[in-house]
Every structure is written in structure tokens, then in C-alpha cells.
Image (cartoon, rainbow, N blue to C red; front, side, top):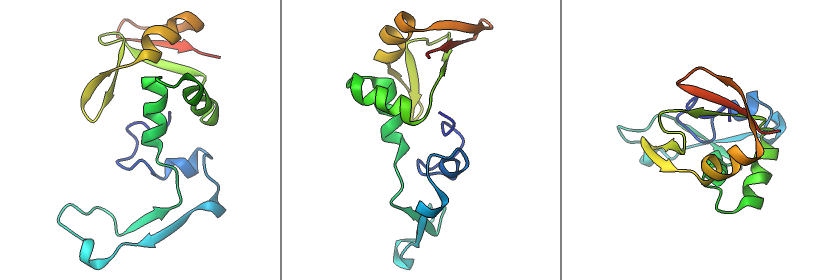
Length: 125
């Protein structure tokens, strides 16, 4: 998904750029002054936007195949890039997590369109 790593927020501006939300559907709200801390990195937060972290994990954990396939269609995913050092995992919060999608679904229903030794790109349809 185009949001992976591009923003620190799961409701980043890439949702708008890639057309996953419409401009008319975007609202922001000023955070309460009393909630500002040293770690605060925004004073406005989006309202009513999808949290794509959940969508990302739904796809890669693939525990509910129907829900995962719905998210793949929502984000119009046609290609999957796999790190060949850890081909059966995805990185989440700095940890490698096992992926049913990468180990069982991808190799059986897709084919490699590019490989460079470190990564392979699969066409999933």
C-alpha cells in the first residue's frame, strides 16, 4: 500500500493523494490544549478517516480471507513486494510478524514479475 512508511500516521495525507478518501470527506479538529505533551507532533487531527493500520494488518495477517480480499480491492493492490531475507513476514512496529498471506496465499495464486535477489515482486491480479 502506498501508505507504508510514508507517514507516521495511519491517517496520513497519502490517503487523500492516492484517492482513498475524497477532499469533501476530510475534516480536521484542533486537539485540546491540555493534551499537548513533549511528544505531540500535530495540533490538528483528522476526523472520520479510516485507520489504515487495521486494513494493513487485515491483509498481511490474512486471518479473515474475505476481509483481507475486500481491503486488497479497496486499495486496488495488484503487486506485492517481498523481502527475500524474510519472505514469510512483514514488519510492524519494528518487529517481524508472520504473514499467512505471504506464505500460503501469495505463492499459490500469483507469479513473480521481478526479482533482484533481495526482493521479489509478485503480480496478484
